[in-house]
Image 1 (cartoon, rainbow, N blue to C red):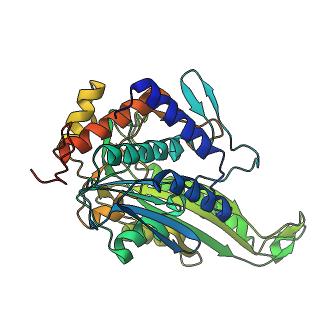
Image 2: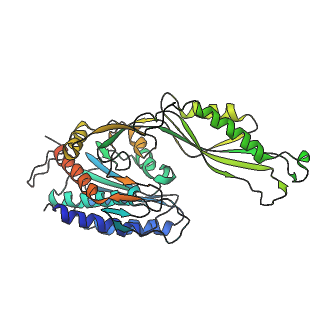
Image 3: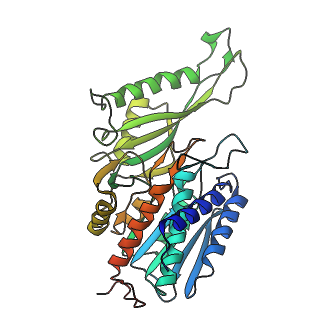
Length: 387
């Protein structure tokens, strides 16, 4: 039975809000586990599927596939981890003006609700359908223990993957920038703050070099204002953390460090970016690649998915993304990635939101794509991708 739009909207809204109140952050492994168990209970009723769980460094992944099909034609993939907020009681949601507001709604609890509801509905209509579902819990930490592990170590494969974690409703991502997260550190000589000539201020050394680094990356910026989908395709460097172990007002620090978030398009590579850092920051600087290093990625979306996006939204843009996703791990094995999502906003903020009507539209795009891709009609015949 195919739900009408009103019933579908109600189900997607309820499931999203139930997921938001579970604070599945990096510091709360028990809450991530609770989120998995909650979703497992939704999926466990599907007959003739197997559910595999993998745990790496306390990061669980759950892979659901039809019995006897290790490499489904289509894989639905998402992450249930959300970022940390310092406010401990902020993980709740409200509905206002057709949107669900709350931490993690758009990145990506709302999309998880869509994937789970879609997977259950398609299996109910087409038992044995060749689709899989992969849910991970470390994308915000770089995906090493999640999708990378599934692809590289477990050997998870599929014909094409749908990841609703980038682009927009009618914007399909075709390119993603590469990423280098790195910690840079300087050491000096501690001294009394009243006698700076006796010390070597590590924090001041760090600040001076960071300004040189910012000046270097400023040369890439265009002269005109940045328009996200038009002229952002150049390297950027954001200083996201700056710290020292010193806690004394009148002590010159002998150690200081900063964390950098660098994004870059081709022809730059992670190695060329790290070489630039070493050259600019000098031999005194210690550079530690941190958490995430990724090369620029071409996603190769399915033309049928693009066609259906245009059909359902009356619009289509093929866009480049400043951010990254788990797509790169699938692309390593030449698996095409369809990367778009419902309308979302204020990602990683307390008032993050997802538009409810667009959730229904995105669900319908994916539903139509899967049924056409697998040559399914309104019958009980399952062709599993064969014409």
